[in-house]
Length: 467
Image (cartoon, rainbow, N blue to C red; front, top):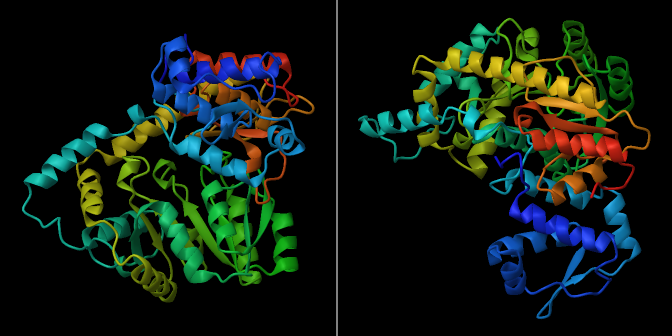
């Protein structure tokens, strides 16, 4: 994380040139200094200049002319539109920045947690312990995944009220692969599905790629609007409802008990599968029943993550369903990837069995609650609104409360200062405009984030970016 007193070298260069262009001190068509000349003038590496120029291109300030260099972009309707709207392409450059940030970037729009919050020491210890052991780790794994880990999951899910056997559990390379397997095994192009609105951005991209019809179910702070859900089920007869009921990404909200029961009733009435994305299940209090538990795993396909709260780089997720569906999911996994990583699965099991998992999760829950309290206090002082009640989640769904506020303009302004945000439109099925953003409380410790948000309020960002 960068120092609170400075913007990154890349961010400073982006800010410098974008200001010159905004103030017409660099005219349209003007050539920017060569990479070597800029590196010498600003006393940075040529790599830093290349990164800054690439970001200016992404922001539509600059265009590349092959063999000639970088030039101030010519004004045109398409460029002006790119600066004021959020076309589909924006999803991908925002995702790229989110998953490949500069080392010193501030990431209040991130979907993960800071590296320092994760159990790197536990992972290193597990790696050393596994290396000293006598078990085989170089051979292919099992088609369903490591049996010992599936048996651990069976006990864990049974404790949460999910009546599952180890044969019904399929290990995957992260929860995202589990979602992909379900989509491909369950759906055909042209099928209709319901999703949370707002909802998980990677799921939406995956469904678009699969050419299915996507209908959003509006959310409230207590979960989906069940009246609207009933109307959509009647009107569209969807094959499945993909939902993230607990500590939802991007809002941090969770289903109320009444909403959970009503969603299951409606799904049963309309013969609709429920795909429950419980990726943050290890952060949810144990007395909170999952949809899979309430449904006895009849109509619900349950997805979770083992590594999310320990070490996301392990990429160990799982999916479980009633036996016939579980077999269909296994068939798709076998035809596309054969096995998941036995090495990662053994490392995850080693960490789960080290005797500290419950304490590890409780510490993380406590830290997230503290971060939420701090972030909410800061946001309230700045006049920002928080949409959902406090919870041990990374996410806050926040709005400025200003008429005409443009989160995409704020995101572009942040990008120039190497502050990565996530405008709400990218979490909606058709990228519909919304005045809300996802804010990650775990990345709210740096004062530079709050200075930037205070400046955005002062400038009343309505399509204009703070300089």
